[in-house]
Length: 347
Image (cartoon, rainbow, N blue to C red):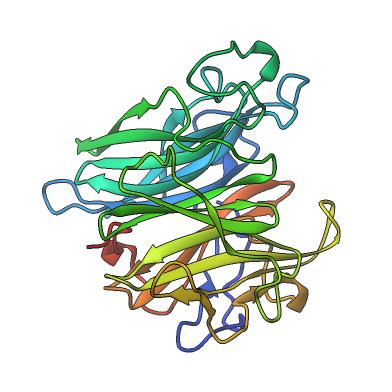
């Protein structure tokens, strides 16, 4: 793997939870067994514990599978899965989970988010995009370019050092009525409900449901661009939500300041908000962890923040551009260990 990022001990920090960027990419486009091998990004991670006390780190990702066209102006994208075992030195690619070309995601399945359902089953959400010219009018979803957020139920098993994956994709979105500039879902489960945060330019929205589908749930703005004290003036995006037991929540949003949107970024940052009710959020220390303007860090394009060791340690899995495409990296606190990763399914 190409060494791209050097460890950054001097990154902007909040309190004791200082992050440092780890050297080297976790996953590069050339590591994939499918797609165009030009980009890999939008990591969503979870820990899988099969029988035999073996621990496996699952990382869902997006990758481009076809170039831009009239039918699919953003190109075609799909969601895949890579995994790391206790005995591995590098991630192995398990291949595609959702490939574009059917139903409501004829062009794009991207921006995966994951929350564990049970010991061997994971719920993966993704942003969808379709080709309106080939969409047949139906009762399940609207034939609009951005039909909503999809869901795939992923069953996994591990035997003979091989991960076996069985995806079951919903035939219609589990969240509809979204705007064009939306995406970056993040989901956790706590106190009998699923809670999803997603971005709809320039703000963050949150909705809750007792079911893993969000049909009929009403989204509301949970955090607006400009809410951070010193960063994220123009846009909040790619927020990662965590539950930490009962009634304790963290929200890590990305923030942007544009010179001319959407072509030139003056600054891109990562910050932290906390809440006890999922409605009122308080900014922690009013400083970003990372800021491209401060020349501390690379551009964080997509993020998944994970806690470990009973919410004592943290890691940010993120994608950042390398040679035009994305690769996946990690920033972590001093004692982070993925083998002690907490579940985003809280009591």
